[in-house]
Image 1 (tube, rainbow, N blue to C red):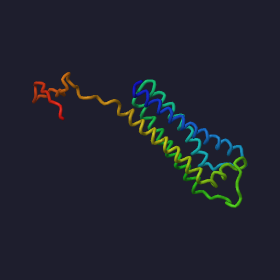
Image 2: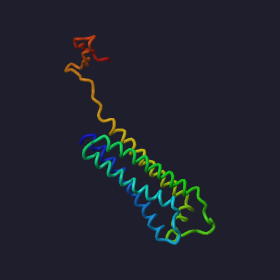
Image 3: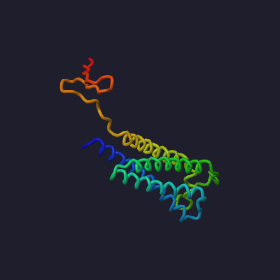
Length: 178
């Protein structure tokens, strides 16, 4: 199996982990819209943008995987960075907003946003999981943008061949070091 296929499969594993995180975020969004406590407009916008950016990233990378065009890869990188920025804004909104009472434990089914605000460790865990998949995605994007580097041509006897230049009209053989 070629290395590019292995990298693509690893990237799809990162996208699958990202999908699980998006599914959890979508579930929280659905529960919060169905509950008594409605989320603020900024929080609703960040949640929705995170989900939309994930599907845009998935579509752009699918286009890149099929046709291997650079603009699709650049769009994938842009969508991944925007998704990370959206997650950071969401976490900042949730961590800095005022919580009603810490003595009164909120139930997830009744007020999911307040319950999440009362669980800052859960927010930090979600952010750490997403950032690890984000770093993996960026490393894979870097690998895909660099491509496979061409090697210097090697002769049968192990010597490297130097290119012809205007100053060196003949091919000069350089012996191996070591």
